[in-house]
Image (cartoon, rainbow, N blue to C red; front, top):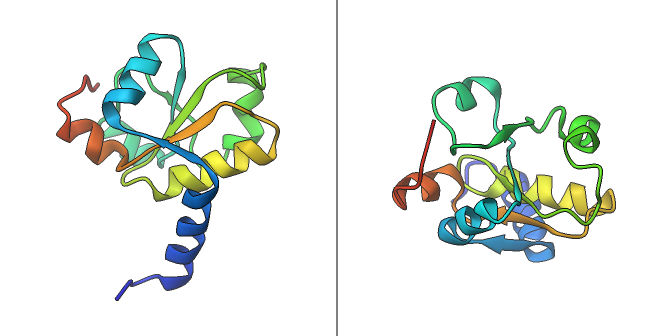
Length: 119
């Protein structure tokens, strides 16, 4: 049974409302110009992150995203540790009017398992 059932339900609902991409798809889209946004906390980001990712934690994402992506049609891929916080982040960006947002399924764990570049 889930340790945080309300969070799990919230995340599952968000996942049903957004697009998810695999680690390989995220990396290919990043190479093609998509903004890869790490929504984890600062200490998580400092321990390692996807190469070239922009750090905007969940606490400041909505406040600062327009500085990083003024174009609401710009491709944005959010990721976190396992894919749930980033689904919430992607859903929030969609509500803000961003039309080309996805979440990395499996989060940074999936990125590392795919042996993609990290910093």
